[in-house]
Length: 367
Ligand SMILES: [Zn+2]
Image 1: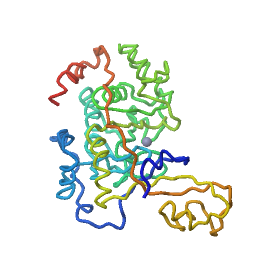
Image 2: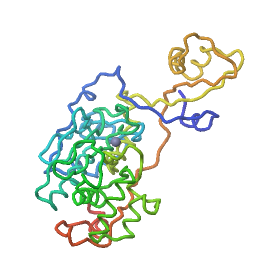
Image 3: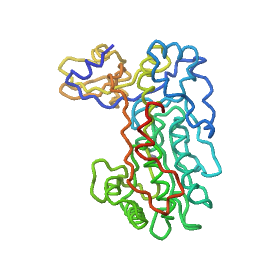
């Protein structure tokens, strides 16, 4: 078995790992029913104090009732998995897009609810918004998305003017309901721990102009919107393909940190496979598939598949990709950055009790 150090110290290029539940492992733990759908009376279905448990205590919990850990976001949005998923169920304030995969962490589901509720707090007569893909039930690769793998990415539709758009209609000045869209974005920025909102520059500009027109602070807008000043901290960032929806990624203070710590324990207990890394090997004269399989602790078949080989013939001097199961390199604890809050609240948005730095952070030890 290779250690993380071998992977980092060698001359190999280490690609991002892929993760997965162990398909050969059948255990009552792994088959435990997923947690119930989000319950509005229970905004966080487990205490942050879970983070205070030692590795031994976590191990005991996994063996006794892994469901009690709640949902875990393991790995990264572009290469990760979801454990103990929570379903976003259809509600009066949103519709789920047809065919969407709506599994996330409890923190992600709660953040969706918070943001959408804010729009309704400001505008009582708001029709439902459409929510698209979140993650697959177990996380991992989802359709053609590059991310959406760890229960923290959510595709939100736009609020359109009545009768002027449908799910995935490109947003324009003519069809977008700017007050409601801005309320949603402002709520994401200030009332949830949002990591990034991917949105086409054209839509960013519409929202920015609207926000400025109702009296939002210009310096704050210039920080949160990428298109205006290309701010390094910008949360709203342009990626092509996002003229039809918001792609929102949330930080999950508990699900990510617990996932980071619990994943190696799940691997140790055989509930989950170790992640697969791809290493590259330059073949020397005389080396055979059998040599490589032995050296990297894998099978000749796996190497042939990874390289699309039809025969076992290797060419000296050529580089081959070799999938290797190995412990994940140690990672740093997850730190959710402080939210960027605006210094003023425009008159038009005063009906909502927006958070302030004081309300969010001065009593942080009690949260
Ligand atoms: Zn997306």
